[in-house]
Length: 432
Picture 1 (tube, rainbow, N blue to C red):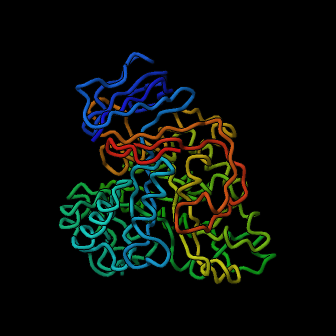
Picture 2: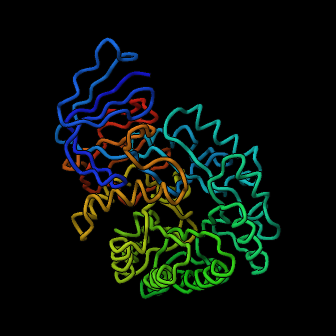
Picture 3: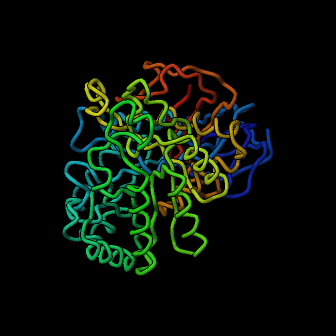
């Protein structure tokens, strides 16, 4: 493992309130020194390996991005993508840690599946992968999973994804059991019977297009139910992929009541609305659905005031066939790793969110939610680092996508902000 010196970069590290030009020395996979700009010389004879120097003049240096929801499709859907392909794409996008939900095939409800995913990620030797375990066996909502065994195998939390737990008694027991092991429950709020078969927001656009809709109540009813059980059991809960103004209000109220809750939003919900499906654009078929301009404005405001703690990619790569059908028959989801950083950076121009606040939402905050040691440039921390040019303009085309999934509504968009270098565990794995 080579020594690396990053020279003269603009460090933005919200975890340590750092926002200045500085140098960084990396040795043995860790950050060992942060010094004044241009004060660290090229590594001398004592350096290990083939010492490298990165000139970061006019570039921004931040902790490696942490994505708290990315479906890697393996095991079970290797025809869409693999852990190898998607961790390479993540590394090239500056994302050094990905969290994989348990709705794989087989479901992550046994330690052997956790070990398989971790081994494949280690073999890929790119971005780190952490896993959520299933809240109920097989995600069927009938019996509790072996939570302690999943925790011992390395799961950072538990989730039932969007699969229903119809019996509230079972859900309460699951929350209580998770609380005994200090495991956070990750909730994708969805009232199954209200959203069943729907593919678009319940509004004028869906009515005009003749699409079966998903009302906001599908989100809010699920949030209300979960919050009541959180209050009773004391379990820490994370609400993922919020999509509505009403949902945001409920989370804000819960935080005001000091319930142990956090929340995230997917990047595409902050830039697209229901109007983007008006031409039956299947690339914009996502669940939860794109909602109104008012909802989007509420999500952006909540991100700024801290009601929403983090932004995730909600990465869901698909093969070509999955999006080539009538809108309602296509599979939902966006291939979102390569657009994650530039879409987030756009928020600093379109909202009152500062660069430091934004970087917090995609580094330190999601790392804290996942309970992992990441999202910081602290001395002696693992050297996971993203270096980007915040001013570089570029156009998203298919040949720029390293992910196996090319399903994104942002093809052809002019984006600003491009990753130039990514360091994972002290290794320089990507340079543009």
